[in-house]
Image (cartoon, rainbow, N blue to C red; front, side, top):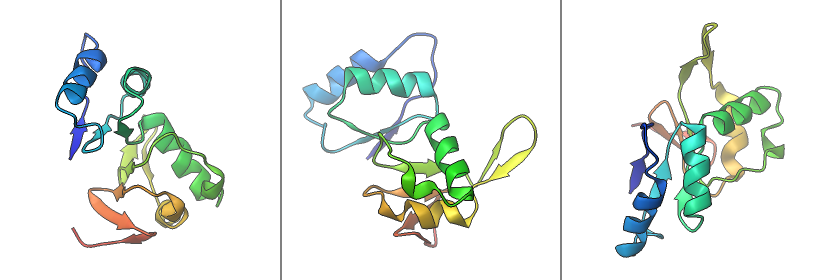
Length: 125
């Protein structure tokens, strides 16, 4: 099960982690957020829970993949979620085919534009 942390005015990392621990869900969920500060905070409070890539991590991986350096990236996450298109304020950026190809070494799940990609191949939704 994937649960996404949205950006809020107050931190919810500690109470959320406490609930995960209370119900013994540490090995049953994946926590996702594209908000870097929220994901960093959650990882500090609840390091035993698997997480997905945050925005900056995703951006670094996609950019490294565009120049065929994605295999050199050492992630702190087990799941990579890449929007097919993302606005960077200066236009649209596409993940491109190399993001999926070079992410095949990740042991976690890979999602590009809402479609699952496993072992470097996009599958139908």
